[in-house]
Image (tube, rainbow, N blue to C red):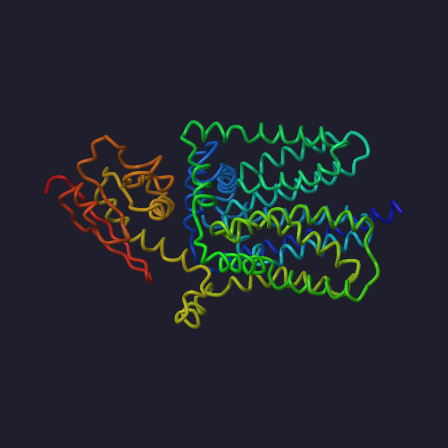
Amino acid sequence: MAEGKRASGERLLPALVALLGLALLLRSLVLVATAAGLQVDEAQYWDWSRHLQWGYWSKPPGIAAVIAASTTIFGDGLLGVKLVSMALWPLAAGVLAVLAWDMAGRGQSGAQAGLWTAALLLGTPAAGILGMAASTDAPLLLMWALCMALTWRALRTPTSPLPWWALAGLALGLGLLSKYTMAAITASWALLLLKHWRRHGLGMVMAGALALAVFAPNIFWNASNGWPTLGHTAEITVAAQTPASGRALAVLEFILGQALLLGPVGLVTALVAWRARRAGAAGTAPRSVDAGRFALMFALPLLAVALAQSVHSRANINWTVPALLGLCLWLGLYIAPRLGRRAWWISTALAVALPAGASLLGALPSVQQGAMRPSPNLDLWARMRGWQPMLQQFEASLQAHPGLPVAATSRELVAHARYVWRALDRPVKAWPGSGKPRHHYEQFEALWAPGQRAPERILLLTNAPLSDHYKKQYPHWQRLDTAQWGNLHLELWLASEQP
């Protein structure tokens, strides 16, 4: 029996590595083929990564640390910024696959369950599209998967489970440093505590205390800077209100969004599982009932919280991405014993090819010039195009005015300009806002602070006509250059107090 389990594990590993490696390779090739740049959040995270801190205006520090590691190894190019983040998705799928193998008995059925689970996760549009972004979801998913696996190990360890709980607490703390959504996993732990409090209560308390200790530097940073991250999170999750007349539509939008995140591979698998159950198909993996409940405990609470959020105010569909781990694990455990080898390779092929294929819409130049031109909304990369050539067009004007400070009128412009002009060593600041800061740069990196005197001459980067708000500060304006890309229009101005 032990030799059979070891053999199944040895067969699982190379197949799993091949699946994960192929998914990462194909996504990397698609990313290069898109000829697109960074999305505004990615450009801002890259900027943060150059000055690591324990927190930032809208996010904890995890993604900045991931990008810092990625650019240190692979450089500041497009793929260099994204590659480590992209690799975290297959790593999360690998952790989930090993967990499924362990849950299903570590035998042949466990190997099948592991491959199914990894293929299901990689086959979601979330993994195919978001998996090509340098986003906070990447480290969050890996930490969520590790927390699930370590919690399962702790519950299944007959003696001395405290080391496993300590590691689970460490994963929870690192997840909180990646994205505050990680806090939702405590609801899953609370459900487990109701059943296992006698034997594992101490371990869970210890894990929670360790997670708080790991997360404490971010709390201290927030307290030292007026709680910007927690305030921003509260604004987008609590303060925003959905009118009563629109709540039903908001709930429907949320449900359809979750189906979109799971995608056709997961939905078809769920349908097959439902039909198999109705037909009374025999064959269940060892401990499948406990394992299935465990998997759903790490999905349903987060979905319930987000559903309630959609009633109160708008809930972004990507907030529930970690729930995919529990759902894919549950489907992998349930469907693998019934289908065996008959169809998992189909799911694997779809997992690798479908999301990447969908993302190719609008990627290749021939597609851009043809089908995408009349329907630019189908181009998934439209918001990432044009920034580099437009901003590079202004470099001659920048060099013609050395020493002048540069301000930009929005977060989007500051972040993209800092990335594109990184080789010029030309700092770009935010034009100071009036009233409460609206983003990171207005609060921490405005060109001048309230009460300070503005510089006598500046360069201003804008994507809108000059308003009286700017003209009141500087009476003399000279437009130096303009740039156009599709609907994007940028202008560079020289502003001065004297002619």
